[in-house]
Image (cartoon, rainbow, N blue to C red; front, side):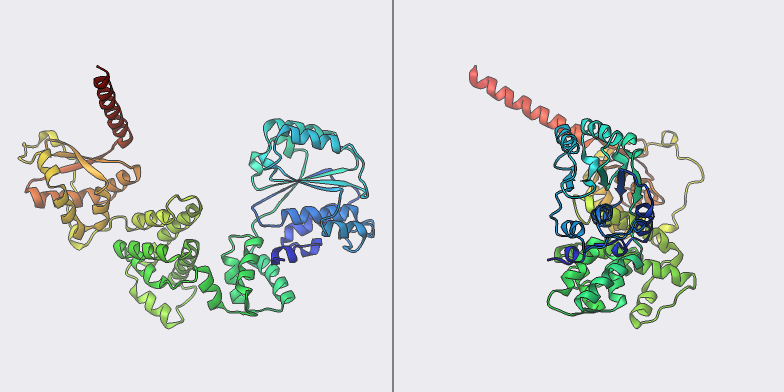
Length: 485
C-alpha cells in the first residue's frame, strides 16, 4: 500500500491543516451541525480524508456528546476506515455529472440509513455537474431528510452556483505552510523508521507544490531501497536524476549571455532535467542574492562566493528576473513546448541590453519625419536581397535582436522609413522596446551608407496562408475542369 493511503488521516488530530482541524472540531462539538458542507481548495490537501472523518464523527457509537474526535474503534468507525460502510456514499461528479445521476441520488436519499445514524454523501469535484444537475441538487439541499448530510468537495468553487454555496457551511483548504507539510512527512518518517533530516524534508516540502499528496509521493519514491535519505539524494531526485550545473546556468542568464543560457537549457531538456525543479531552485538562488543585497545573509561556501563574483548585473535588478521566472514556472504545466516559457523569460530579461558602443548611439531629440528627408538610393529590393547579411551583421551587436528579426521580414520602404513586419505580438513588442530600433538602424547605416529609420507592424501570416490555400484549390479545380472538357 502506498504511503499516502497507508497514512491517510483517520482522526481530526491527524489532519495536517491547522485551520481545518480547528474548524471541524468547533462544528462537530456543537449541539447542532449543518446538513451540507462545502470543502474547497487545491488538490492533495485532504478534502476527501476530512469528509470521511466527518462521517465517522457523526456516526461514531462511542463518542461523547460534546466531543468531535471519533473513537476509530466502534463498528461504524471501522466500517468507514475499511471502506465497507453502506451509508457512506462517495460520488465522482466528473463521471456522474448529469441530471439523471442526481435524480437517482434524490430517490435513494429518502431511504433511511441501513446501520448508521446519518447517511453521508460525499460528492467529489462537484463543480463538474451540469446546470440541470445543479438545479436538481439544489432541491435536495433545500429540503434534505433529517438523516442525510452532504459534503461537496471541489478544486474550483468559483464554478459553483451561488445558490448551492449559500446552502453549505464552507471550509476552505488553503495551501499548507512548510511546517504543515513537514508535520505530515515526519509522521510517516517516524512510522516507517526512516532516517531523514529536517533539511531534506524541507527540500521535499518546497518542491511539493503545496500538496500533501505530492510531498508524500516524493518521500515514498526516495525511500525505495533505502532507509536513510540525505539532502543530496533529494536534490538528485528532484532534478530528474541527471547532473545540471545550476550556478553556471544562472550566471549565463543573469549576465544576459542568452545564447549560452538557451543552449544549456535545451541540453537540460534533452537530458530530462525537471524544469519545475530548475525554476524552483533558480528562484531560491535569486531570493538568496536579494537577501545578500539587503544585508540579511552572506555567502558561506566557496561555490556561493565564486557564483557571486561571476555576476555582473547589480543585485537589486535580480528581482525583475525573479518575477519573470516565477511567471514562467506558473506557465510550465500548460506549455505546449515545455521549455518555451523559460526561453521567453530569458529573452525578456536580456531586454536586448546593448554593449558599450551601442549604448553611445544618440537618441533623436525630436521625432523623425521621413517625408521631409531627401530621397535615398537604397530600395526595398536591396534590403530584401541583403536581409541575411543584415542579420549576420546584427549578431555580434545583439544576438537576441537577430533571433527576433529571423521571424520577421522587410515589408515596405517609404522614403527613409523601413517598415518591418513581425508575425507574433511578442516579437513586435520586443523589437520596439528600448534601444532595439537604434541598433537595427545603426546596422542598416553600416551596410547601405544611408540613414534609415524603422517601424514595426504586426503581420497576418494566417491570412496569407488562407490565400495560398485558396490559390492551390483554384489551381486544382482548374486541372479537374480540364480533365472533363
